[in-house]
View (spheres, rainbow, N blue to C red):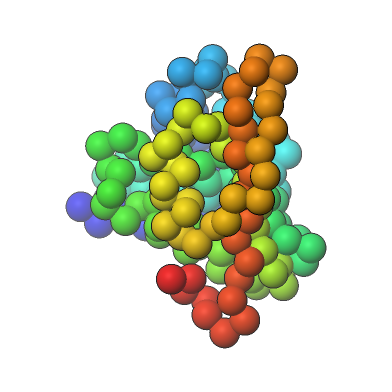
Length: 152
């Protein structure tokens, strides 16, 4: 199945919201929370299939100071098929186009598959902190290479 990365449009919003709940429901996130998740980040991308199914999405802030990856999800049955990498490559290209030198993110320690994915992209762990509920959060950063737009 072929996929493409496009900006989030209203026609994909309901499907992206459902994926948001499927991915993050374990931490109490609901589909309606997707609206809040896409208010603060100034960029949102979705990966869609030929039949317009939302396979993944990324929300992020974008500035010359650097980027921040907010929410990032890939449908479980499409993980390890290059969707996450394609989303990240599109995100990184957008960040680099405005002069960003790095991108940061925070993720929960329980999301081990995501941690492995981010480490594989070249992110470094730069710190950790505990939420009020006691859950460990991991802060990560990737510094973009000067002459390498593809990152590893």
